[in-house]
Length: 150
Image 1 (cartoon, rainbow, N blue to C red):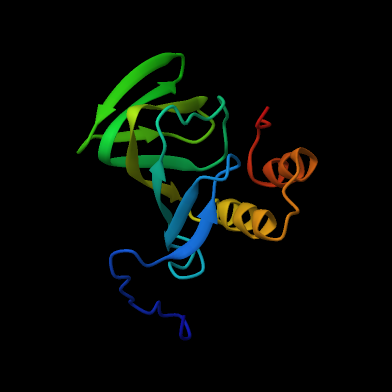
Image 2: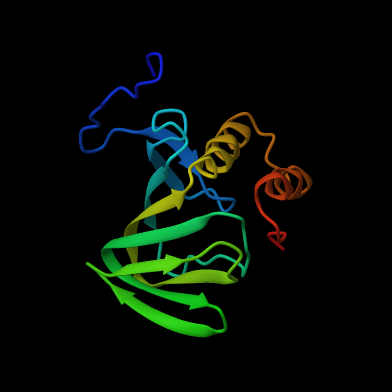
């Protein structure tokens, strides 16, 4: 950022800052809160078959764009099925989780406002140096999420 103006930027295919899920699947930060003046955070992830998250809530809105594969999202007590090209939106404080179909999948995850992508940056950093324990994960998650991972 220069003064009060954001700087435009371009990331080529395959570029992005390393990030990871608690299950240590790889992600790439495509847009960070720092680069967007806090407006959004965006992650690209390739998820293995059967990958899932626990139900959780947080204070930011979350939107997914499915690039490849099949995902089932549990949102506010109901299941939503999403194929490539679908968009799923979850407002702040709405309980949600997801599971990936048998072929795996690829998606973009967008947080509004940005900042939550920093959790995945820190998970990756801790995993790289062997410091990602269940206790550390719970401490990190409490900082960014209103419900625990477990």
